[in-house]
Length: 556
Image 1: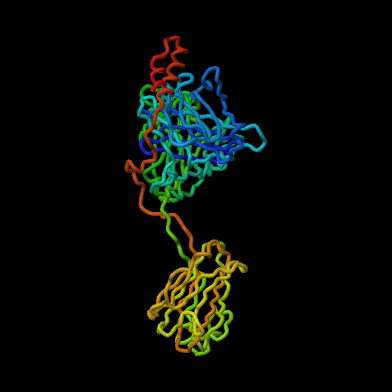
Image 2: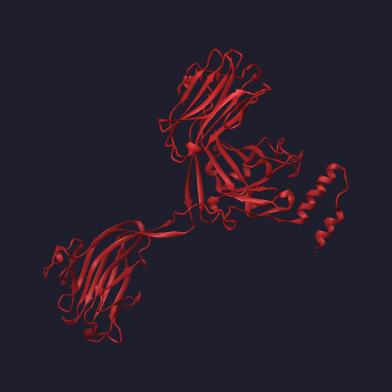
């Protein structure tokens, strides 16, 4: 039965390709598939590794051979080198530098020919093996249609730097039916009917048919259901009549709504079972059938049922590799906003006694400060030290804020024998003293001004706040020292708060499909690289190389 982790990443926006990566016992199987094969030729894939140490020991299977210019399949180039790769052999260049480059084509050493899908397995020499986390998914860049000179680099929308949608696909349930002897032994089969298991597949025929029920699957986003199917002898099936044969694919949505996805019956030629809804075909060769959209997009739970109604033992259908894929969408943005969370506060309303500082919850100690009518007060008769509780801020950026007013700033003196001042400090993490401000009256006598921040205390209540020096604090403790010479020189404080500040991504809006924000860009071309490839191909073909053109480009 299937194990390991799957990841699906969609690159580009018009066209798009899908990259699938599967962990397989320390190896990584990777495939690139065009979502619009008729208009897309896949020519290359670039990406980075999160761990440079794996690059020197990296291999692919089937192994790429320089002698034949391919790996025997669609891979016609493979190179791994830390942060140095950005160009295909045909001269097409992508932006940035990458750790790994793979080229695809049907002609040796080139990107020539139309490639709609390619796959390979990555492995390394060593005991640790590879995981999906070793690949930087944000860096995945696929080159398409580069042979025309107007090719595109398709990138990951999650890393495009624009407001867009990030898609995460998880395998909600899957099974490949290996290592089981009966259909009911599958981890995802709820009721097997008369279906049976054979050679890693589930099977039905005229003697063993009925309804095959799969487990109910929870859905967070949008569901896609897929499975492989084959019918070795479609010519044995009958379409309609007393001996008519059919295979129905149903899904139960949210435990109450039945949806018929397809009814497969043999076509007039007898060479395929054809779905009446989607037109998908089951033939002698294994084919992947896929269902998505419609009711599957809004489902909270899905349960698939495949019903086989065959009349003869030699009318056989086999299914394999059933997957329920759950894709969630999150709108992302490079923009961030500051989220402020209040973790402690004091409004000094708990006491209105003249000597009431001992009744305020956050005050830890003081000399001669007091509380008057719901405000903390200091003057020439009630000054000195005041400490507040230590507040846990959890290693976040912190902010201390409070309201302040001084009804008669004109009474204060700046310096000299009668000089007045208010110092504001914070003890950070229980050990580091941060001087936040020292307030003294200005030359015009209209405000007390902080020497660090320039904030002012005047006759109108104003808000003071401090963040500098409070970054990444585990705890903060406010301390103030008032040194005032006359009883008429009053300063009042209210609404003290200690908060944490956190930068978080802004979410909202929808995918932006404008050209500027599309997750792709036009390629640039190195003419000499293109001509060099043409010369190499001409040499292989035995024709004359375009030497004059190469010299002309080099001279330029």
